[in-house]
Figure 1: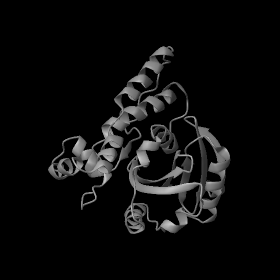
Figure 2: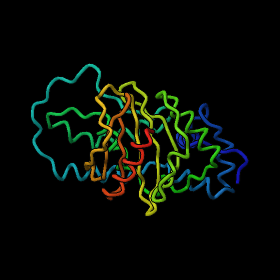
Figure 3: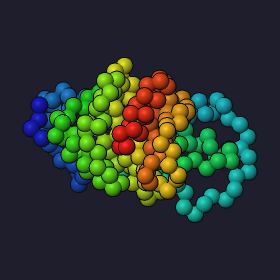
Figure 4: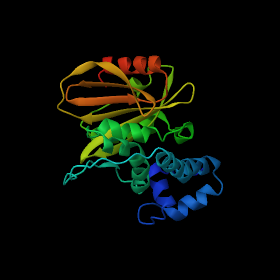
Length: 247
């Protein structure tokens, strides 16, 4: 095991050969003897075959495109803050979001989050094993981006889910945070939070997005989306717990 813990951002930069963003030589040397690090690197490698398969599915179901309105000067942007992987993930997210282009509704932040979450698998998170101290330090950094403070303990009150990590995303220039979990059956679930001026709706509303169970609520200037797996009852329990705890 290497003495230094490499963040996901550093590993992605390593995969992209960005010497100025990560200690590439140190990571390469550590990966030669650290199986766990090798597994993390493998999990962060973009599955291009899956993206290509998604394009094939779209081609198989092509329909004539209606005349579209002129695009807005500032189209919605969804980014993984500070990660060189953003372009690759944006391509995959575009596969799901593209479906909205033939409809009337403009996709919002929850639509982009749902398309991103649809790319997650058990191997995306299973390798992550941080100490409670490291989890809290990461959580403090991430939640500060939206002006919140969340304790690790409040995310670990349900035995059905294990808290794994936090990261900062961005939508239209606004910070958006993702708190990632694995269920006891190995399904990835994410709680995403963004500042918002929508009216409070503290009771989570269940829905399905990108084929995943989801619940959304709003409280005290923040909009929440919990999404992942296909167990509506579990998502409802988790969402109710988090809403009640006022995370």
